[in-house]
Every structure is written in structure tokens, then in C-alpha cells.
Amino acid sequence: GPGGGDADTIVGVATATAGAVGGVAIVRLSGPNALTIASDVFAVGRGGKGVETWESHRATYGRVTEADGRAIDEAIAIAFIAPRSYTAEDVVELHCHGGAVCVQRTLMRCRELGARTARRGEFTLRAFLNGRLDLAQAEAVHALVSARTTAGADSALAAMRGGLTTPVSEARRTCVDLLAELEARLDFDDEMVPLDVEAIERKASEAREKIREVLQTAKRGALLETGVTVAILGRPNVGKSRLLNALTRSERSIVTSREGTTRDVVEASMNVAGIPVVLLDTAGIRSETDDEVEQIGVERSRAAAAGADVVALVVDASRGWVSEDYDIWKSEIAANERARGAAILVINKTDVADAENATPPADVVDSFSDVVRISAATGDNLVELERALARCITGDVVNTESESWAVNQRQAEALHVALDSLDRLRDTIDADMPLDFWTIDLREAAFALGTVTGEDVTEDVLDTIFERFCIGK
Ligand code: GDP
Ligand code: ZN
Image (cartoon, rainbow, N blue to C red):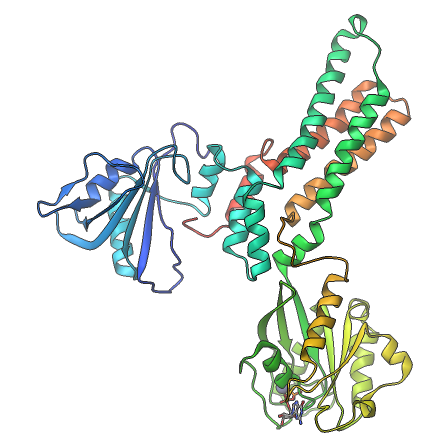
């Protein structure tokens, strides 16, 4: 398996790659040969000698060199000697110039000297396997790196500090202790005092309570992790594109007065109460169009609306509520169970007309969770629209901007399994089933909790977690 005492030495680029050129790129080595490999590729002073003894946490200026001593790059090397490093192994960072050539040549040299290319997330995996981080903290590293909003980053930082593991670990401890007590009885029943069933039930219910509290953060966690999509719907020319630009303060979407200009779905992102939101500006939905390209755009709009978490139907106050608006409402909102629960009516162009002109009949109004009157042109009431979006997304129950940790979806699933097992334990006890059955439920609960903290975790689970990381992290 990965990690362990005889781990090989790995190398990877720790800074952003994916085509972007930065001023500096960091090539990171970790493992038992990190220091000797670094001494071979990195030379200091005029004589170009390798570093003989590395001092931890100290920057040294020098050159990365080819085998024959020719310079590849000027660089700074920093050694982090085990266990005071990210992975708890010997680590050396080579701070090279950014750009693909310097980095690739440096990587190549490290590989020639026996380092293996690090897999996705392998540095963090080693940090976990070596006990530097628990599993929830390791996952938080990924959440922090991929956070799209300040709220997401704050929550990840709180999780990195380890707050999530404590209650889960305590609940697991309780299960493990109860398990030990029951198993002792199964083996030596005759020699022991009678079982205190009430105490067992009380402890199990304390564990259940702890798990429930942790699970209360799951909705916020899911919102921060995956975000939501909001589809902007409406017939042509009502101001959908202008609204998207106004909300995201960009010119991402083409704004024009020609009908059918937005032929495809345009995406832009924004932040609503700390939740990453993808806005979809859809082609105007018209049922009669001869233009085949436009027809494809209309189909894509329909698909986007069907898949969105929230739908905003835009109407034009200067035109009033017209039958085409009604048709779109009927086919995309009234007929769509998902949209019905999360739809906002946006009456636009209030700078030139009275919003009441476009107010639909009461049964239509009632199908929306909010009606907001705005002007995309002047920006009037956009704040109110953002508030309506936030209400719609969070259901008003979740404080998405709290800076505390939240469980991610994987952790929430495991916690639900644990909760179910403990519920079953209660039924098992109530039904006077034999002790064997109690231990089955407890073992399941303890195992599920262990997959959250990392105390019980299979290689499969580790693979799925660390596969999502970027290379070099
Ligand atoms: P779409 O087809 O729904 O995307 O509509 P556009 O965003 O392309 O806008 C159509 C026309 O309406 C453009 O001329 C916009 O400038 C104009 N428009 C959009 N929003 C407003 C608004 O709030 N007030 C006014 N007066 N004009 C607007
Ligand atoms: Zn448009």
C-alpha cells in the first residue's frame, strides 16, 4: 500500500500548472531520499557543490543543474526535515522560475535520480498516513484549495484546524467502548455483574446526539461544496443577458436588442451569501422559430432550466404579462416539480414602466417563492433580487456565512450510516435480541464513524478521496 516505512521518494509541482505561467514554480520532493536527490540536483556557490548537510526550514540560493553540472535554472531550495514537514517525511522544495521548461527539466532530473512522479493528492495522503493530519483535515485541504468563495474557504480553514473530528471521534470512542464491554460479556458472562442496559442506552443516545449535531452542518457543507445553478428564463428581449451582466458585473453575456441573439447557454459565476452560484443565461424561449440554430439554443435553454436548482423567470414591464410569458411559465415552471419549489419572478425594466403591468394572475404569482421588481439597466433592486436568491437557495434556515466547519457529502453519508446503526441498536435492545445483534449494530456505527476521522478506512475510500485532489498537493 501507499506510505508506510519503506515509502519511495515522490516529486511533483506544488504550484498551479494547467498552462498558467507564474513567476515562481515549486517542485516538491518528499520521502527518504529527498535530501540526497536534492543535493544532486541543486548546487551552491561558484564551485557548484551540492549541499552536504541540509538545515531544516532554511532557504538556500543556488542552481538546479544537469548531471554534467550545466545550470538548468537559478533556484531557492528549502529543506523540511522529518518530522517537521507537510508529509512528516523529509521534504525539499525547489523554488524555480515559473514556466514549463524550467519546471519540466527540474522534474526530469529528480526522476533520473530515482524520484517517482507523485499521484494526485499523494503529499496530503502521506501527511494523513504519517499521522500529521486526520482524514477530515486532509479533506479540508482539498476543500480550501478548491473553494470558490470566501465563505467556502473560511469553512475549510475551520475544518483544517480539526474541529470536525473531535465530536465524531468521541462518538466513535463511545461505540468502541460499548462494543468492548459487550464482547467481554459474550466471552465471560458467568463471571460478570449483570449488564446495565440503561447505561448502555444512555451512552448510545449521547453518541447519536453528537452525530446529529454534526449532521446539522451538512446542508451548508453541500451548498459550499457544490454550489447551485440558477437558470434565467424568459422570452427574447426581456433583459436576461443584461440582468446576468448586472448581477455578475461583467460583459460575459452579449446584450443586444435583436431577437434570438443569445443562441446558446452562457454561464457566469457569482457569490450569493457565500454560496458559489453559476448563472445560466438561456436563449430566449420561443416556440415558433424557423432558424435551426436558434431552435437548438431553445432546446438547450429548456434542458438548462430543467437541471437548474433555481429558476428566475424574467418578464418585461414595458410589454406587460403576455401569453408567451404564460406559455414559458406553464411548460418550464408549472410542469416542473423541481422548479416549482424554487422559482423567482423577476419583473424587469421598471425604469421605463410600471411593474404592475407585468404582474401575472394570482395563481401564477403564488407558484413563485418571490416576486422582485428590478431594472437591470439602472441596477435598481438588484440587492433585493440577490436576497431572494439567497432565501431560495438556503431555505432561510442555514447561515451560510458562518465561519465554522461543515461536513462534506461523503462525511454526511457516513454519519447517516452511523445514525441508522445506532437507531437499529435501540430497536435491537428494545426487542430483547441476543447480545450478538447489539454488537453488529455497534460495530457498523463505529466503522462508519471511523471512515470520517480516518481511524477506520479502506484503501478504496482513500483512493476516492485523494483522486479528487490536484497533482502536487
Ligand atoms: P434578452 O434577450 O432577454 O437577453 O434581453 P437583453 O438583455 O439582450 O435586452 C434586450 C433589450 O432590453 C436591450 O436593448 C437592453 O438594453 C434592454 N434592457 C434590458 N434590461 C433593461 C432595463 O432594465 N431597462 C431598460 N430600459 N432596458 C432594458
Ligand atoms: Zn440574451
